[in-house]
Length: 129
Image 1 (tube, helix red, strand yellow):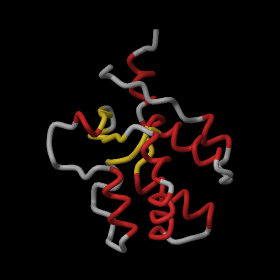
Image 2 (tube, one colour):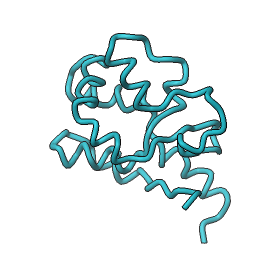
Image 3 (cartoon, helix red, strand yellow):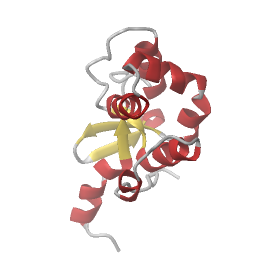
Image 4 (spheres, one colour):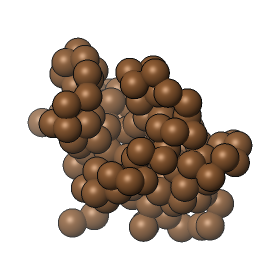
């Protein structure tokens, strides 16, 4: 059984924000955030394969579809805004995807994702089944 502290410490390891994802992608591929977002939209199956998540605070990670308010954009909508040249909304760090699935999907497509990033990730386990 996982202890409460382990559970809380693993939350950030399950989540990759839109901002972090695009920053990582643009660094690896040496392209702008906008171009990175456009590439991801052209490979939207990668985004759709992963759970869309909202990190409400350091200890609360929920699936976007179970979010109880309209305060946050859908992570894919945030990527679309960036791809169209708009500034990332201030919630770009709060919306994102299941970290392990996204990183593995990008690695499977041949991107140079460092194995330490993948190994330090934890699979997102849905609270609602």
